[in-house]
Length: 218
Image 1 (cartoon, rainbow, N blue to C red):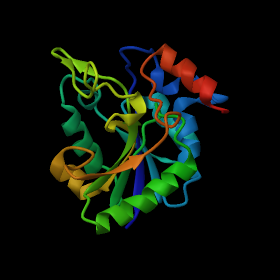
Image 2: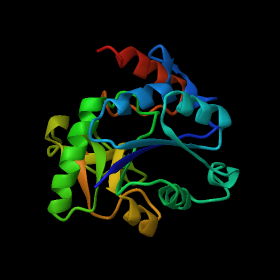
Image 3: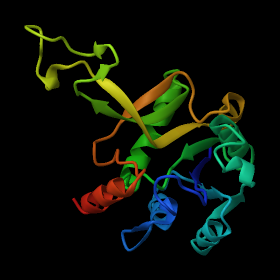
């Protein structure tokens, strides 16, 4: 029943150059995530998976395992995301994989520990995986108009809207062999592990990075 935490990183980034090693919390996002995960007692192994030798060297200096990916599993063109997940799962050990992206730097050790606890309870309740979610209660439209509220007399305050669930993917846990079978990092019946807005931050661009830095010590 061992748990392997996988940190997937790559050299390229479309919206923020060198995103995975951007300066953060006195170090960089990759090292910060390794240090967080090393404090989670439920995790047996940590593996950094990357095409970047410099990122793999950083991981080695922190005493964690590495998985070197060929460029076709990192260029976001040659292989699909599902193929990348399956490839990584085939090349790491452990019974279960905790997929931990370093671009979600405000998921702290205690949150990972609680997620692991809830994951094993969820498996016994016939869920097949766990995903971190943020609850959204916002007015949302599609091309045809409002999709979760009514215009006119039936309009309700936002706190009374039906809950929508936005996967943050800051934490995803599933059995490793299932990840290989699914070619994906969660199944069709995941347990919704709710996290707060601060923990949900996912860095895609410079503004996200600035927000994460501002929220770090809140």
